Amino acid sequence: MRTQGYLIPGAVLLSLLASWTAGDGETMRFPLVSVASWLLAVIMVVAVARPSGPSDPGSTWTRRDTATAAALMLVAAPLRLASLDRIPWLLGGDEGSVGLAAQEFCQGARDNIFGVSWFSFPSLFFVLPGGSIGLFGRTIFALRLPSAIAGIVTIPALYWATRGMFGRTVATVSSAYLATFHFHIHFSRLAINNAWDALFITLFMGLFWRAWSTGRKGCFVVAGLTLGLAQYFYVSSRALIVVVPIWLLLAAIRDFGLLRRRLPGLAFMLWGAAVVSLPIALFFARHPNEFLAPFSRVVILGDPIRQESLRVGDPQWLLLWDQLHYTILGLFSAQFRLWYQGAPMLLPIAACLFLIGIVISLKRLLDLRFAWLCLVLLSAVVASTVTDYVPSAQRFVHMAPTAAVLVSLPISRLYAMARLSRLGVRRLLPAVGVFLLLAAAAHDVYFYFVEYSPSGRFSDIETETANRIADHMMATSPLDQTYLFGLPSMGFATPSMRYILGEDVGEDVVGPIYGEATFDLSGPTLFIFLPERLDELSLVANAYPGGARQDVYGHAGELLFVSYYVEGWPGQPPAGPAN
Image (tube, rainbow, N blue to C red):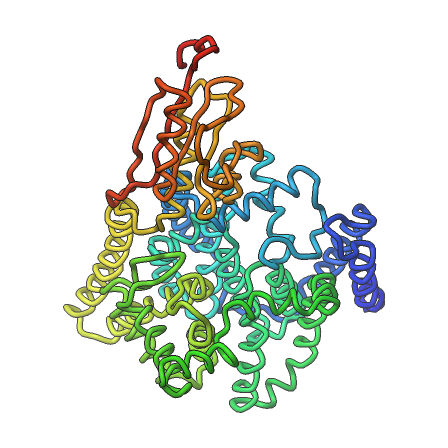
């Protein structure tokens, strides 16, 4: 206890020191002192979390649980790692931006993990793809690998969390479905930070429930550590800051005496969260616009919805109702927008099970386990309702494990009914449950890898054009220089092209050329023309005759660009043969 009295304030002081020595710039004032202070503060948190208090016999972990969790993880791994550089088939612009920001850490141009980087997201996340790029090179596989790992680890994390909350059947079914859940597979294959929130919220759920059930200080402290660390990733983790107090209010209504006995543990949880998140929290306190940026650029409340109301002539409440309507449809039937275009979150079998799971949860809402599921689901629905481009897939990723649990509830109910039924039905009901799980899982895997991915629905013409230009340039050999006739629509500053090709990829031809084309050609040269600037091709061809023209079309048959490859020109000897 005496040691603890030193560790608690000492960890806070070290976290404050980490913030001060980091500063607000892209590079830290004293990087070694800052990182070491923060890591030592985290170690102190872990030291305070040493096991204490009674264990929960009902949640005893066995070898069977270890084997089940490992087997499910082995199912999830190939579904998230196979052809990671080719599925999804395009590197999105935001993925390219993440890669460029990660390279800044990899190359040492930026090292402040307690500030923000691209799109006002906390910098710590970008260290992960930066490290992967440092190990495996500047490839799409390396960029996407950390998200795939986060998605894989979420499977055993969900098994562990739900094993303590709902028992082995729900744990097995929910984790098995999440392993094959097309929506979670997709976001585990993208180089953005959303998949990490699903992992952190799952870990927090398991830790917080164990802490609440047993009163163990260690669980409260590690739950706080998880909550604090989650704040360095995607903004949906901030939903916990709202969900937890509402859940505690429900807990107080149900059993105020228990809440009062858990107050010391909750204080430890807040302390653990504060120690870990203090550097980024202080940064946001000094720069509130950076904290609000992820919300302000998408929230429709206030002036945006007022302007839309005036434009269409509908009252604001009706516009919000439409937003809510499309959000709910996005769970079952409406096609998502932005990061998962052309698919709803849940396919028919899983959607039916999910709806039954919601009914089960609402009927048992006074059971705090089911209240937690409903609150996490509600957080995603509210976030989508008050933001633009409804329904946007990336705002639902943090609730993917919760959706898997809701899908598992009807199947687990069949197992429970079997134990109370006659012998014949006792064998039939579990078989029905297994069939439903396998059917839902098979449908999701088939849909994602056989229907969705080959269809090219995950695309827009700008992203496809940028990727195809990069592929075309890499396939052209020999090649000394490239001129892109794409501005103002597209230039070499496009993030996906910059990440794939590197910084010195070519030169943008800013304005249209008139008369004779004059370029400084030092070797084999590739000219690339977007359709809106195709008229300039004749001027280049007249100035450098004998080149090879190639028209490149998109997956839907539209012309993306035309290339003109010049290997030699009058007054210049031709280059050697192509490799």
